[in-house]
Amino acid sequence: MDLQTKMRLERLGMDVPATLERFLGNEKMLIKFLKKFQADDNMEKLSLALSKGDVQTAYEAAHVLKGISANLALGNLNEVVAKQSDLLKHDHLKQATTLLPEAQSAYDEAKRIIDILK
Image 1 (cartoon, rainbow, N blue to C red):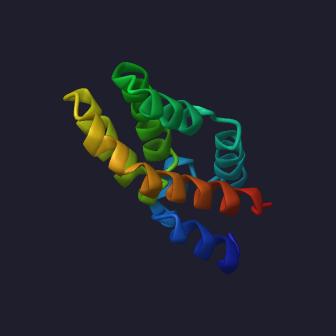
Image 2 (cartoon, rainbow, N blue to C red; image 1 turned 90 degrees about the vertical axis):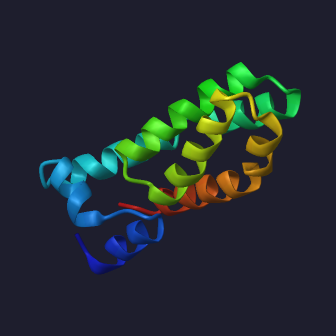
């Protein structure tokens, strides 16, 4: 992996060597799965559900995002959606909603960086 790609991934909170090890050292496979993240719509679902006050749907979307971001080692995103998921699990809608801008920012950054990976 070239240094520029590694630095981009590290900006997302990724421990690149550990993540590559999880993908059996296969950089192409890691990038392939990162690119699949681009098609995920759970951030939209989370945002919409929070705006409607739908705790269950918001929890489900946050929980899925938590799993995806953990599996792909998107640490910055994972940190905030994990908090949201835990808050929503205990019906703390208002507190989870206050984290939405931070989650959206981490999500947008991840998508932007992944988009330029080759």
